[in-house]
Image (cartoon, rainbow, N blue to C red; front, side):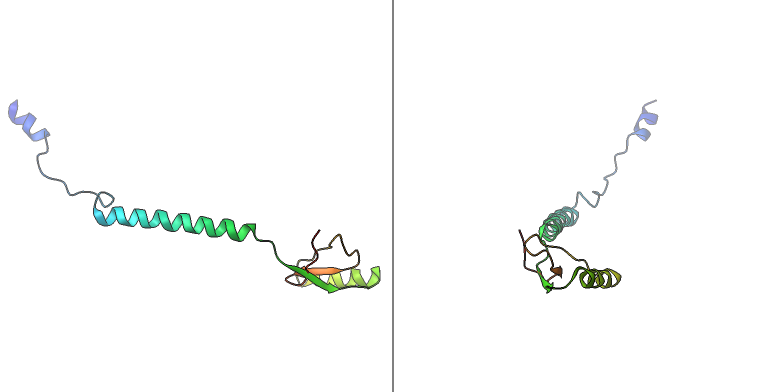
Amino acid sequence: MAAAAEELVDTTERKPSFIQSPLGRNFVIGLGVASVLALMAAVWMWSQQPDYKVLFSNFSDRDGGAITASLDQMQIPTSFPRAAARSWCRPSMCTTRA
C-alpha cells in the first residue's frame, strides 16, 4: 500500500511555466504597457475632430447641391457649419465651428 502511495506522489521537480519565469513576467508586463499605450493613443485619436475650412461659398442652392452631390460621390465627408448657411466644407478645409 505504501508503494502505491509513493507512485501517486510526484516528487520530480517541474519547470516553471513561461509566465512564472522572469522572461515571461517581463513579456507580460511589456504587453500590458503596450496595450495601455495603444488604448491611450486610440482614445486620443478618437477624441480629435477634423479641422474644417470653407471650401465653397456664395453659391446658389442648386450649385451647392451639385457640389455636395459631387463630394458625396467621391466619398468626401461634408459639413454645413451654422455660421455660414451657404458654405460647403470638408475635413481639413473648413474652420467654421459654432
